Length: 231
Image (cartoon, rainbow, N blue to C red):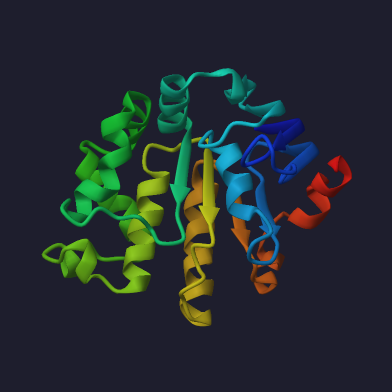
């Protein structure tokens, strides 16, 4: 699913290399936990995987596509078709309805729209099906704006948005940092269930080492990143 080879990134040409990843592989369907302290470059690393940032050197390949060779518009299309994101702050859009927030990826990707419609008759039905899988009853919150939802509810809406249309890869950036332990563990169980249903590859970044036992494999970013050896 993912292959990085000698991928280096720096913020400015006259600054030291911030990330240098000699080699990194993730299998299809794997649930990978990446941990590291705040400021260690976790979000920057995810930005490379998602094509938001481009390496100065090396290869960042997703599904055998070297996304660092795509132009900006091509990366946008690739990302929309194949990658779902769960952001730390969720990034829900307040002027859209709850269902419109969830189905938004299907407005940008015909592939995800088609895959969603293989599961349900309409996008709205598919959004409701996923919410139900995440144990969120639409009838109790349908009249609320996303800004009126609790943090736990917003988190599940963000997760539903990330997996609708079955993207091959979901990238989660500290999505449980604002949750208490019980809600956090419940959310992970539900997310794993939905991810497993469609064999989605999950990259989950957090500084909370208490979560890692639930994943197939753990990677320490400090061990993966060899930037200091680059001078």
